[in-house]
Length: 330
Image 1 (cartoon, rainbow, N blue to C red):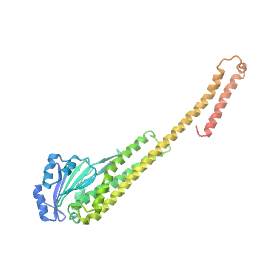
Image 2 (cartoon, rainbow, N blue to C red):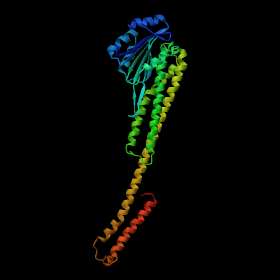
Image 3 (cartoon, rainbow, N blue to C red):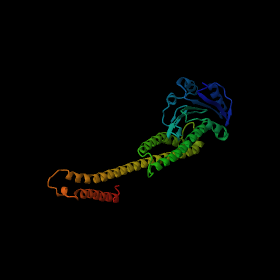
Image 4 (cartoon, helix red, strand yellow):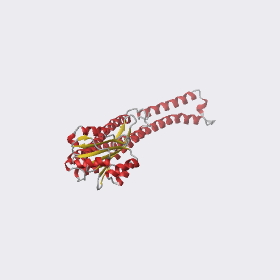
């Protein structure tokens, strides 16, 4: 399974060390040392590929099913022999304005960590490298891995939220511009942005309760001395969640403002149409009267009749135009 297992290493006293190739032997060696643990990282394994790992580490079948199926909400579940944690890392494509989420599952046991990654937004190579450069943290075993991975995922939430904020400011500038270039498509852009924020919220909001349990509760396989570190992660997650809630409110306000602008613009258009219709109706009415072909219409036989009627039409139209202009209809 070389393609499925991204990395597999045993860590003893905070340092990476050689481990037997067989999982059973490696796990037995880690447990024998007491201060060692095994970290196996996997990428999108199939059921057959994951079967050996689940049997060797004694993983619960329900957690295994979740890890293989993916499409899980962030959660924390406690089983007899392991702790199962689901995280949803987030990526933001600034060019396409799209938020994509991956999935990251962690099995935490007494002397092992198994990470299962789905999607492109959950690479752990940087986290593993950073931990290997800090033996003091890595010495705390599987708890350190859970903390480092959670911290990396949540910190990236804040970075993505900041990028979304920058794009939202650009969208707001377009909404409130005096002469927007693409007024008709603005509502679609706002709705599209709200969908991305909703996708982001699905990754962060369900994680609040599990992180609170790690920070303030008594969770098996997690050392008590790690609670202050998980409280820090929980604080960052709360900050990111509040950031996202603020983005959603701003989008709702921007959408309301845009719809109000559309209403005002439609009213302006209706006033202009009504004003021009009124100016067109006056000469039409006068011409209609003189087109009825009655015999007893004295003005018809006067030399000044035609210019007088034309002057009347022009005068009334100018008077209406001035009135509508003064009232802001034109």
